[in-house]
Image (cartoon, rainbow, N blue to C red; front, side, top):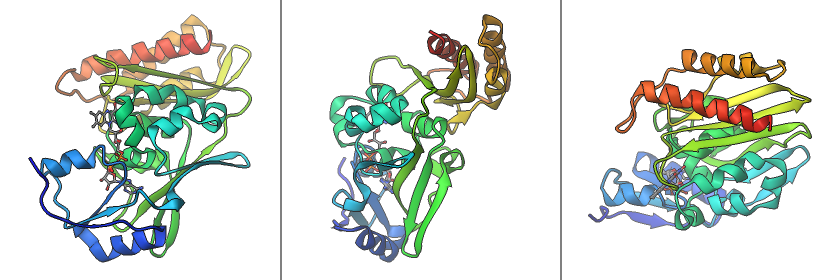
Length: 284
Ligand SMILES: Cc1cc2nc3c(=O)[nH]c(=O)nc-3n(C[C@H](O)[C@H](O)[C@H](O)COP(=O)(O)OP(=O)(O)OC[C@H]3O[C@@H](n4cnc5c(N)ncnc54)[C@H](O)[C@@H]3O)c2cc1C
């Protein structure tokens, strides 16, 4: 199929993009890398009257270090994240996760911001942003606001982004010297969306973890931080008994939802498998 006809603008600045979005209202839609939107346009699942191509907006580009904060522009591609030295040093979880996203051709065009805003519960970046306690910077014509990643993913394909807003960038606290992480994903074939996944981050002191963040994805309508498992691990010497308690706590507390290939029960089981693998890998 081909998309319905639409008008097209390509603003050069954030102000121009925001103004086009405000004028277009409900009839306007942003396009970044197009790796999700082009398919929905061609299948006519989405029929905007105006397409606003933000790919030339300089304010949305680049990865930068600002003190203890890493800023990732919304237009940064999955490949740029995979290859960035700043990411490798200060947010290594993202480097570990990037190769799991689709295939190279899609990673070369698809963007960090597009993935976060689309809010696919099976996507890697939403869970990573929660595990790393990221903050979303959202702009509209009147100014900017910040929303914690942990409050951003509201429901299936639904985020806290409001009409007239553009995701400009994300801020991530840089990894501390004690930072440890593990990215685990089960997929039928490499590059497929996950059946279940886990983005885990913590601080490690000797054989004890604290400040644990275990963000599961592709198990529910949004990525989910598993507080019960985090509590089971935080501050405890990481023994086999503690790992078993954490796995049990995850399986008992996660409210999983099945999909066309896997039941909710399978997802619950797999979440425990991934957590056990992650904790064993973190402890070496
Ligand atoms: C075959 C295939 C396999 C894939 N596999 C995976 C996978 O395994 N894991 C994964 O995570 N993703 C996967 N993807 C999706 C891919 O990562 C997309 O690139 C990503 O989800 C969307 O990014 P984009 O830049 O292409 O966004 P677009 O398609 O351009 O836009 C997506 C949505 O976000 C909105 N949007 C984009 N940028 C902004 C912004 N800055 N502010 C506000 N709204 C914005 C658009 O209006 C649109 O609604 C796959 C895609 C394909 C085609």
